[in-house]
Length: 149
Image 1 (cartoon, rainbow, N blue to C red):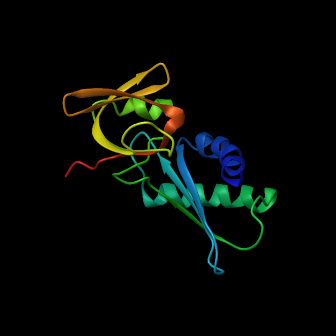
Image 2 (cartoon, rainbow, N blue to C red):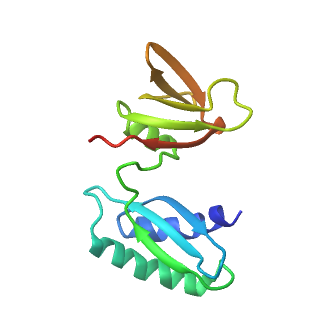
């Protein structure tokens, strides 16, 4: 999978600069392919942070050339509705409201919204109304914070 290979390639570079590689997306087709790299830092992300990371990531991508053809590179913050992908993300944002989309084949609702109650043995614990659900991480297609307005 191209995404996993690029993530493996870029994570050490981003971490050496003091940031976390939160997510990446490759959107291709029609001659306007884009590699989006979402980063976060202990104090958030500034435009200067994005420019610095872009310079380093671009250099690595130029040398390693993991993506065939031409594409644009975009570095940005994950935003207020940041994705939760790793166990550390689910631990860090315990107490926050999140939206979860489950993979097909999961028994139960495929879209859930509730309060994240952390992790328990590789299960995301989500409180939906009066019910506490244990969602297996390998059955979660996507999870995002619900922005506080």
